[in-house]
Amino acid sequence: MRTLEKKKTSTAARHAELRAGMEEDLRRLAFGRSWRGAGQVTMEAVQQLEPRARRRGLELLDALRRFDAGTYGICTGCGIRIPYVRLSAIPETTVCVECSGARELLFRA
Image 1 (cartoon, rainbow, N blue to C red):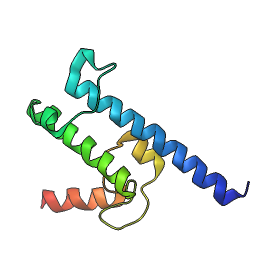
Image 2: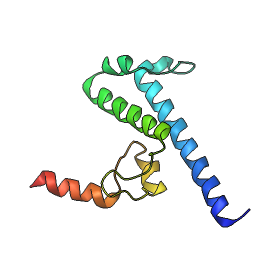
Image 3: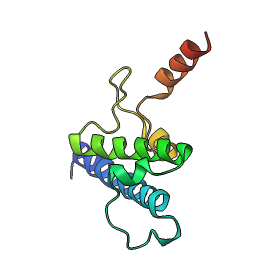
Image 4: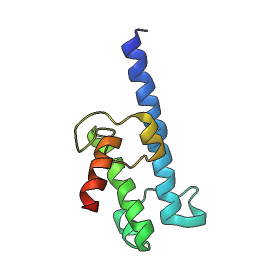
């Protein structure tokens, strides 16, 4: 297998792992202790959560939507691929470290 093919396979596997983790987190938020064996989480279920959990749930739903659209892991600020290290720390992120820092500076001003 060529290096580029290996890299694509590795990226796909990492993204599948991230997606599974986000789906699990979303079920845990929506269903609490009984999340195991729970089905798909709906927007209506997320809307019923307390504000902090609702925000995280909406971010997770948006990240899963980006997976389906093929845009997951692409920075919405500059368009570059977000490094896996950042995605593994904050799987629902929409921006790279540089754009995140720029946003913080903008909101502090």
